[in-house]
Length: 199
Image (cartoon, rainbow, N blue to C red; front, side, top):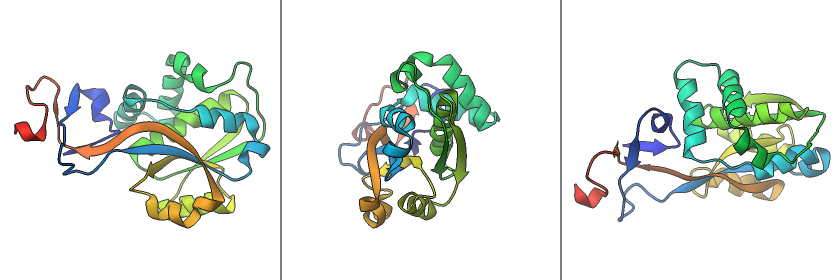
């Protein structure tokens, strides 16, 4: 049993088995959620955060570096430096910002990866960025009350649905930054089985 995003997909060639009966539930997205007013206070940061989207190769690579013992800031910096073609799709040409941004995150591997990558990207355009690890409940309440500016780790529509029901009218959902977050049965890609039914 495994889940995605996970560092193991960066370390090995793996695949999920199809789950036609949804025994493990449906896939989710991981969304970026901002506090209200961020677009006015930090328009450049808001645009970058709104553009932020990556796939399995990106997030798994950063998670794999972290799992190997690299400091999350160092692995994020290495990935950003090595993947400017991807980053350039998020950052408008000539973008320049100022001021401070506080990114909240829970200490899940995927959240550590996306938070520190976005921290590096925003620092590159001139922001002072603090990454603050908090519990999930405090993360959402911090957004709603304005003590946090953004999170990049909202699992929706299921895992974090209760939190969004509580604060949804006080925050701004910028949409998915990762699609296909899921739980299921994972096997090496070379195996000639493709579905749970095949077992």
